[in-house]
Length: 340
Length: 288
Ligand SMILES: [Zn+2]
Image (cartoon, rainbow over all chains, first blue to last red; front, top):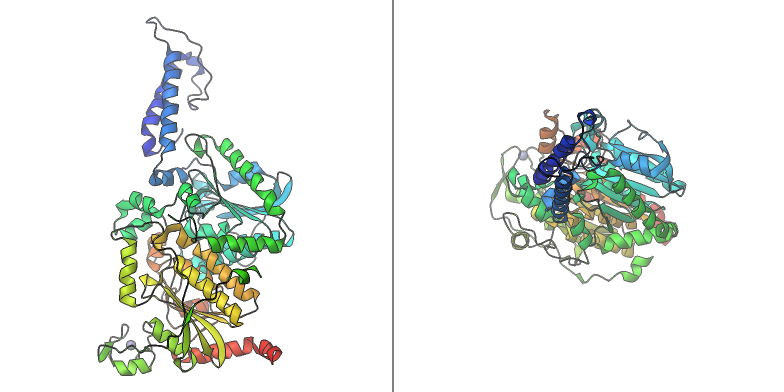
């Protein structure tokens, strides 16, 4: 069953009507597959006694739903984008790794305390090219969410990331990261073991790497915990992903002293891919299927794959010194240009 | 090195430490609540003579205490875009900036100066907690980059005194991007073989801690400073546990291996001088 967001209610109603009609138009025997709305096989019924064609009605409603979906997603508010970016059916880092990276071999551990499952990564091939891949993974159901701590890493996670980036550097492998995290885990244990230092070292390792670092924000880019893996040569963002210094909820409670202003805060923070591209803080926006990544995960992942493949050759052509200089110039130029 | 070609020599203006005359004859310690004769407190570098509590230090005080004979040269920092997002919460960000400038007589949350520390050249950057809680925006990033460039240009170590409530939310992602930018600034100093020393003061939290403040060759803190990534209240709300005694304080961090040493304020200058001397003995020998 698809999960609908609040602002998708009108679309949800249309789609459930369509499903209903399809069920009606089909013989009782085939009612085993009511789930996939538009993918269902066309029903083979003509006009009924009143001359009313279910087929026609289905296609009319489908068109209407499609139009509404397109219209809604063409002008999502920042707060709506926050919800889309956090949609539970949106593809996660491991989905990208599984589909885009062949011969994937996970690597584990920070070599000093544990293996943090909030950050996953390892070796593999992207379009034949050996790579190191790293992602923040939120998990897809209760069990995996707990296992991956909802994508909130502890110091061990960032230390694992740093280790993998350094490994990539030693063997000349480009690094692909997939970022989707509410932020670093705010816990007693995390602080005791140096959360801040671990994040700082991960950023430092990315910026010092003699190999290309290509980051994609696939869902929520949550503050320092995201920068730890997104301090790259190229930063891509999915069309409806967000990247923010603080969650709109927390910003609302701090600056407005009122938790109900999250939507206003989301607007003020300018956290959308479109805003950030305008500010020159990210490099490229990858379009999502109509209705968001969760409507067609495979198409989304393929689009990200194409964008990464297109960005990589120019970076691979640079020698380590030129690459680091270009990276430094890129970050030093930020905030000095493209501002409204 | 390409940055040398793009380096614009900062306009240097000399500003000897201005003495701030305390308005009141007596000051109450925030910790033990005892009254202290203000003149005495000043002599003690704002450390309570009764309980040893390190009270807040203003930027001019910090600079005076750190440089030999209180003598230093402040550099003018590059201007950063003002209110790049046109941010407004209950107040306009541009108004907040104006108010803070008027209140603190500072342009932003970082001041950079150079002079001698323990007889050796050093560049010192001091964060101003009094300016919008020492939050990190584009101006702070620009300032730290300028400080790093000056250190490299002068072949001098960089010492940073941190004090920050974290990110400057009103600058959104521009604030967050100061984490990689300041990290790159630190890398320039390290690449040049120069010492980078961090002195953490109360409080140092958020994105500042998770970037340049934790990357020192040497990590020092003043006693009992709050140092962490997440704020204690956020942690309490998340884990719903009572925080351990002394949690996220300097001594706790020292015990957990995150600091080299906790140094009392009156001993700071001497300690910094010693460290620089030891770390740069080889360079001094080469230069001789
Ligand atoms: Zn006291």
